[in-house]
Length: 202
Image (cartoon, rainbow, N blue to C red; front, side, top):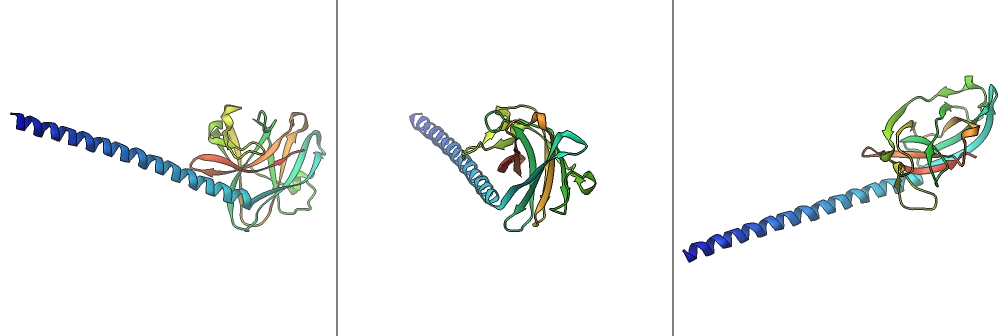
């Protein structure tokens, strides 16, 4: 009986050790996968942050309604390769960022008169997402934060496809609403939107 009990105890202890080893293996494998994914996301963001460039060109009042401003930007990729980006205008950035509704136009001629709506093409391609899915990077910071920390709700992200050549876009916004507003460029990774660049409106 003692021999049988000893064998049974040994089997139980061996099985328990195997279960603990398996649990530890799964735990450390999970950590390794998370760290690997985080490193991959970080490398993509670092690459796109240096590749996608935004430059402010000019700002004018809308001739038909002086309460609105139109601001022209040029967005391009330095390597002239395609990129899918998303645009978001945030007020009071970065202290208390809140989204602003904007209208976005595109034009092929950099030197066109942006006050003339007939020379512009409305960009109406967008995606809706929760603010918790948008990660912004405050100025002079390397850390990302969910926009939902500051503002909660559904966001309209304007989609802009870069085909390798410079794109000129014009945002139209009501002047009285602008308070330290910045135009953010985002990229999408695994259903999350990460800021890769930004440019002040004023």
